[in-house]
Amino acid sequence: MPRPRSRPDACPGALQVHEAADGNLARVRLPGGVLTSAQIQTLSESAARWGNGELELTTRGNVQLRAVSDPAAFADRIAAAGLLPSPSHERVRNILASPLSGRVGGQADIRDLVQQLDRALCDAPALSGLPGRTLFTLDDGRGDVTPLAADFGVHATTNTESALLLAGRDTGVRLHPSEAVAALIESAHAFQAVRRTEWRLAEVPDGIDRVLERLDLSTTTDPLPAPAESPPPIGWLDQDDGFVTLGGGLPFGILDARLAEFLAAVERPVIITPWKTLLLCDLTEHMAEQVVRVLAPMGLIFDENSPWLHISACTGRPGCAKALADVRTDARAALERGEVPIVGNQHWSGCDRLCGRPRSTVTDVVATADGYLHQAT
Image 1 (cartoon, rainbow, N blue to C red):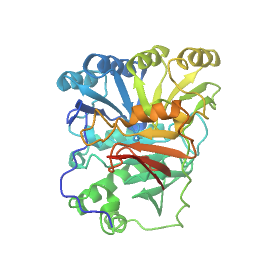
Image 2: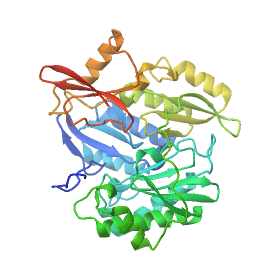
Image 3: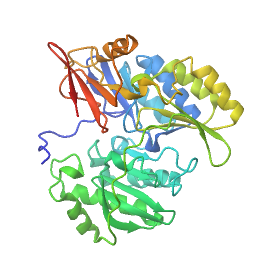
Image 4: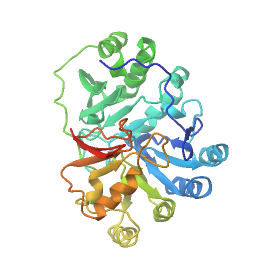
C-alpha cells in the first residue's frame, strides 16, 4: 500500500518556487510539451538573465529554471509569453500527450485535445486544489505516454474510440473522442471528492472503483494489455505530410540557454518530451540538414545509439542540500573515461531518495558516504 501523506504537496511551479540549495527553483508547465519559437526565446533569455543559464527538461515534459534571482520578474515575463494562462491552476496543468501525434503515425491526432483539456482544467475553479503531482495523459494509440501511469488519461484505440485510464490502468470504459475531455475533468473532480491527504489516485484505497462509481461509468470491454515502455524519438523522423521532425537528446536533459536561442531562431514548433528530449517539428529537408549541421556540435544529440540517452541523474550537489555527491559531474567523468558500461539505463542519485528516477527499468547508482552503490532493478 502507498504510504500516507503527512504534508500537503509542495511541488514547485512558476509562482510557488522551491528554495533549493542553489537558490529558487521555478517550474513552468507545458501542456503537451508544446513551445513556440517565441516562447523558447523567452525561456532562453530568462535563464540567462535570472537563472543559472540552463533550462532543465523534466519527465513530465515541463521546463524548470534553477537559481532564479527574481521569481516575480520571471513570472511576469513568462506570463507575457502566454506560458502562465492561469495563476490559480499553474501547478496542476500537468498534461502529457504523444509528442509525435498528428505528425508521425498514431491512431488519432490528439493535439486539439491537449488545448481543450488545458482550457477545461483552468475553467474549473475546484480543480485548482489538485495536488501538483496530478498527471493527465493523452495517448494517440501508439502507447508511448500510457506507460507513464497518469492519474487520468485516454488511450486511442481507433480514431473514433478511446480507452479511459485511471491510475495508469485501462478501466475497460470506452469513450468517443468528443467525450474524452469531459470524462477526464469529471474524473479529477471525483478524485478531489474521495481523496484525503493522497497526492495520486493510485494512493486512494479502491480509488479507481470509487471514481467510476461517481461518474456512473461501467466496463464495456476487456482492458487493453499494458503497452511496453517506449524509447525517446531521436534523429530524423519523416512526417506524414512530407516535412521532417528532428528528435534531439541532451545530457541529463539540460538545455543550455545559448542552444535554446538557436532552437528559437529556427522558428518552428518545439515539443518537450517526457524522456527529457525535444522535437523540432515541421522542417523542410534542407532545414533539417542545416539544423543537424549547426546544433549537433553544440550538444544536441541526434544519434539514437548515444550512451547519453541511457543515463539520467538527479540534481546532486551543489543544487541539493541532501545530496552526498556531485552526481552529474561524476557520471559525466565516468562515461568519458569509459568506466560506465551501458547495459540498459542508469540513474545516478545523490542520496537514497532517488529523485528524478525514470519509471523505466534502470540500474541505480546511488551516492553514499563511502562511494557509489549500484543497485539493479
